[in-house]
Length: 330
Ligand code: 8YV
Image 1 (cartoon, rainbow, N blue to C red):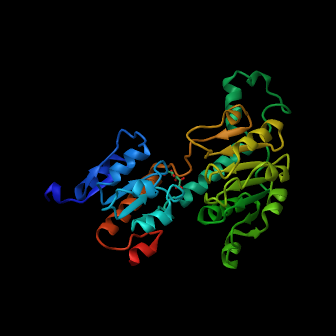
Image 2: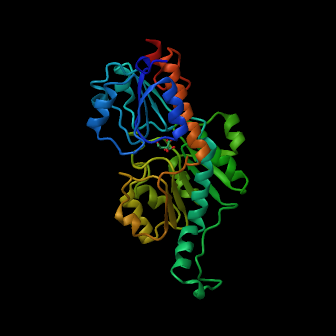
Image 3: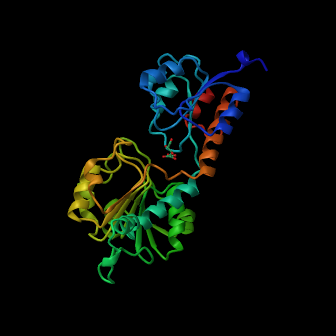
């Protein structure tokens, strides 16, 4: 095929070389294997010349980004969360928006559980304790003592696919699972997870461990702040694998410092990749760099699904994970 006849697409961040090579067979690809995060201006000017783009959470797709993008048909997020998309602006511009649901559910639920366990059982703090040469001070009552996971109450806020995956894992630990969500699950789904629906206040008061798995939006901004943390047990842990901004990081750091709650596990942060210095100063917090979906198999599956979405859109077909169906109907 003549290279010039291939549709032009943008891949905004580095992807696996094999995935890039596959895209290059069908498309004229503008890639960014150097993985330098684009400025909004650079992104807008790149989008102006392409029919499709594969992007990540670091690229904000809004009216400004789309202002010059007259030939753009689809922006495929390599991510299930799409708070980096202004969907109404994309719809108004006639641009399809897609994400990567399902392929990352189990990997992300696994990590939610890993972070919960690391937090409650002080895994990273213990490692630092050894590296700092403290093992000779080991005693049965003073070495890093944690909180149990088994037979405790897990409170899940956000009961979509990933939340339900975490609930099912919790059953294996004999946990009592309570949840809060915008809407209550159908009875069959509640039964499958053996989870009880409660209001947010009850959840915060009753849970030994709270895990956040809800999407970010203006409504979910600071779902957990000082007022909510004050409702939690002093022995409780808080885990956030959802999005930065769902937790008020300053309020959380103050609570961790004052031991208002036992510990926190964070995979996401307000203003990431920056981490608030008050959080960095706390020993009772486990920090991870937004890696909940980061197994190689799953990251490959996410890229492959984003590529399938682009291929479908450019072939005139409905992408498998289309968010704004009204654009396709036009
Ligand atoms: C991504 C995520 O790694 O899918 C999501 O919503 O948070 C992660 O899986 C991240 O958003 C990169 O785009």
